[in-house]
Structures are given as structure tokens and as C-alpha cells.
Length: 277
Image 1 (cartoon, one colour):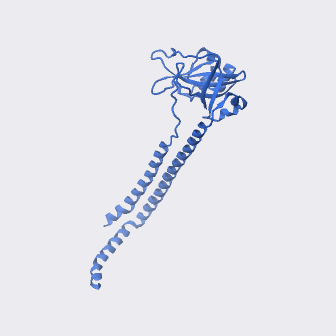
Image 2 (cartoon, one colour):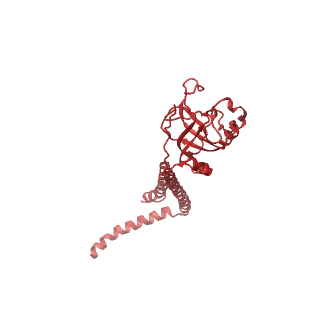
Image 3 (cartoon, one colour):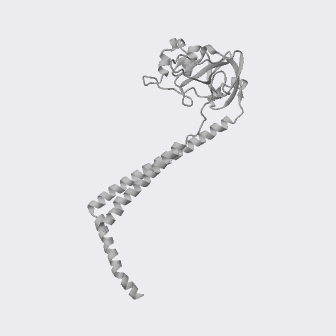
């Protein structure tokens, strides 16, 4: 046993010598300063990237909760016309299902252009539905394709007269698109409200300006979800949580934190140690 321990002494001395050489190589004054700077930079970089990754995870969980709320609201019983007229604040409850009865006002129909559906360019058709003489809702009735040569040639649609029944859900107004000048067209619609009736084809539609323009009391917007009919398509995109991108961003930030740590240990400890050996 004693002889075995004595036999190991040269090897231990060699390892101790290598360790001292390593320490002398990396703990010089200049090395100490550079190591301190590199350590602080790595700590800050890792802390920042981990924090950003955690923020992306929290955003993903928030969207999951929002999506669950939307699904729960869609599962509620549909509100009828009587309930809507009794309490018009229900139009703040986005995605709530409704079953409305009223009359179309086709003279105020608007076609919003540059609205693709399933890869095709076309128009979203909006027509006000009058519930009573004091209450009107703007209904996104559906989508029609754009004429290949002449954008002003609109595909024919049917607008039934008399009382109609509309199934849909409460929604925000159509999103704004960019015009050729690089600005959203809501400003242009506001400044040209006096001449807006000259054309039913528009880029965007502001609900308040539209109410002033038509003289209607528009209380909200409804997305019609009936089956395709009347020359209109209603293949609206499904509402998804959209959390995949947040998971992807979080993975990238965490991976960047790991890369910083690996680079730090490689260049500040492993490589100098190998050089000292």
C-alpha cells in the first residue's frame, strides 16, 4: 500500500505542476482584468437572454389564456335580436355568437378591396343590417373575388329584401391595409367623406365616419358565419392562439444563453488550460 502511494507521487507532482502553470497563466494581472470583463459581460448577456426567453414564455401563456376565453365565449348561447336591443353594450363582447333579425340596407353596401382569401385577391362585402329604426349593425357578409382586368367590375351578389335572419359573431371592424402612398386609408376616408358615396369600393372603413356619412346609428360589427350563399364566400380563417412563434422565440433566446456560457468556458477556461498544459 505504501509502495503504491509512493509510486503515485511523481504523477501527483506532475499534475500539481500543471495546475500551477495553469493558474500562473490565467491569473496574471492582465488576465485577471480580462477575465473579470468577460465574466461580467457573460453574466449580463445570459441574464438578458434568459429574461427575454421567460418573457416570450409568458406571452405564450397569455395568448393561450386569451384563446381559451374566446373559445368559452363562442360556446355560450347565441344572443338574439331582443337581447341585443335591450343591451347594446354586448357589442363589446367580441366573439359572442348572435342570431339577428332585420332588414338589409343595400344602398350603403361597401366593398373593401385588397382582402385576400385562400390565396386569391378580392373584396370583403359589408352591408348594414337595420334591427329597428334606431339601431343598425354593420355585417361583414362575405367575400367575393376580384376581376382579373378591371377592379371596378364587381361579382354579382344577392341581397334579400324584407326581414332576414343572420347568424354570426360579434367582431372588430375589418383590419386596415396600406394604400399606395404607404399610409392607412382611414385618414383619406375621413378627409373625403363628402365624396365617399361616389364609389362603394374602398381601402378601409372607419365605423364612426361611416355612421356620420350614412346617418345610421351603427352600434357594432358582426361577422356573418352562415354557409356560403348569395354569391358570397364565408371561409373565414379560424381563430388560433398563435403561440407557436412565442415558443420558437423562447427557444432561440435560451439557446443563445447556453451558447454564451459555452463560449465563455471555452475561451476563458478550457482553451487557456489546454494552452498551459
